[in-house]
Length: 196
Image (cartoon, rainbow, N blue to C red; front, side):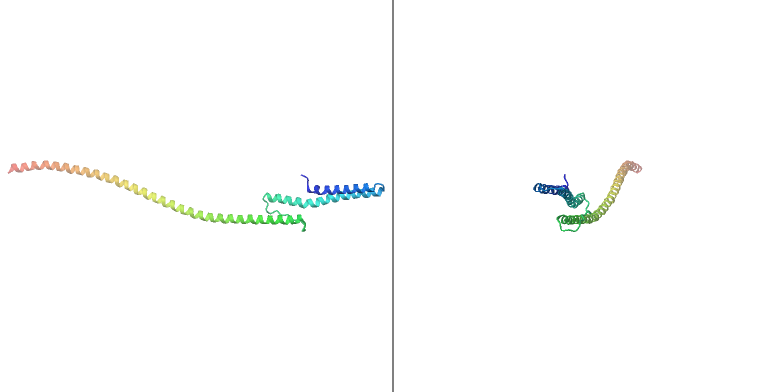
């Protein structure tokens, strides 16, 4: 890629050579040594003038290009400072600085907004976490209560079964006592009848 300096300097140098060539061709008959010295000095002047003009235009544009590259890489602090002027390059530098200012401001506002949202989300999340923790604790407590009630219920069932077994044993014992008393009574009645 050719630089802007060469794009400006080369045409100026070519115009200078063209004008010099035309001048020589028109006055070919009356040329002398002084003319050649002036022609040489004029050619050198045209060359350096074209080169210097190209450099003076290319410098600010290169500076602006470098800052634009920096800005595109995320460096929002970058600015272009050129001599105050009313030419197009100076106006472009001012516009570039305005764009960089707006981008920096926008990024700052976005970061502040993100911080604000983050704080709000953390506050809501903390409240939800506290509620969840409280509910989990209630569930654990209730589960322990239910487990205790289930254990007590099981013990009561076991005791009830034991009491039923004891009651059955007592019934059998009572029935066996009745049966033995019932057998013993008639014998006692026979003895009483025999005595009478």
